[in-house]
Picture: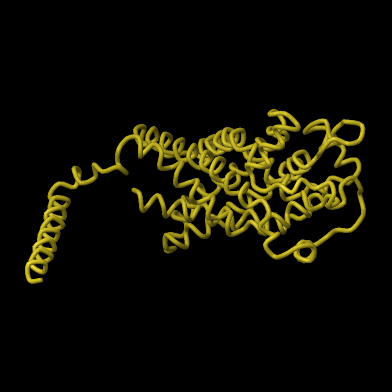
Amino acid sequence: MSGSVTRVTEGARSAAQKVEAAAAEAVNNPKQAKQDFLHTPVARAALPFVNGGLAGMFATMCIQPIDMVKVRIQLAGEGSRGGVRPGPFAVAKDIIAQGKVLDLYTGLSAGLLRQAVYTTARLGFFDTFQNMLSARAEKNGTSVTFLERSAAGLTAGGLAAMVGNPADLALIRMQSDGLKPKDQRANYRSVFDALKRIAGTEGIGALWAGATPTVIRAMALNFGQLTFFAESKTQLKQHAPQLSESANRFGASAIAGFFASFFSLPFDFIKTRLQKQSKGPDGKYPYAGFMDCAKKVVKDEGFMRFYRGFGTYYVRIAPHAMITLIVADYLKLITA
């Protein structure tokens, strides 16, 4: 027994000595101490993408019920100018009445996959572009301009949207499935089941249905969200230096959420309509494409239909933007 105690004591003493030696090494040679996995060239290039994906997935788990309600509002009264204008609480109540509370989380697996692909790419690309612009500006003794941030946001959004369109389409199909008569519902088990069945019955190209408005929406959303977030942080630091870092992030993300909602909602509306549609008895889709959908909505339902549910959309976009951007910022600090 005493021998065991002695060995444990010696082991603990040895471990303590190693920790003390490592701490001393970090103080005396900080450059060498940073040569760990997180500071290898590959890890530094991958971190913006990993941080962005984790932040987006966390935000999606928080706001998925709001997204579900937003989609149902956009699909209500399709094809008619008048009709009932359901409010978010009425829609949520109806979803729960037809099933259960967890139905508000319908399509969560698709939402998470979408974030794992789309947000990983858009935040990763944007941070990569930002770092390149910052390095060039520092070298030239200048600062990154609003136009440069805008170009970075637009490009990052467009590239990411093309990659993430299949998951986005699966999400819309899963969320709109409950609007069909019970005997016509697909009852997808998961996002992978949805992707497999859509590709099998409609062709692999169907997974990119609505890609044009998806890309435009992503560019508009990124322009509003990422560009205005970066710009607002800079402006708040200059004009309100008394704000703490947390207050600065929160204020900048709230501003970014509004502009992201305003610029992207019309394209989000068209994207939802195109991705939800299925062939009619004549074998044709209701909308031939982006412009056809836009024209028919304006003609049959009025221009302001594009902004129906703006409040719900803002409540969906703004918290998601705020959570994503704040979490991503903190992850950057942790992994710096």
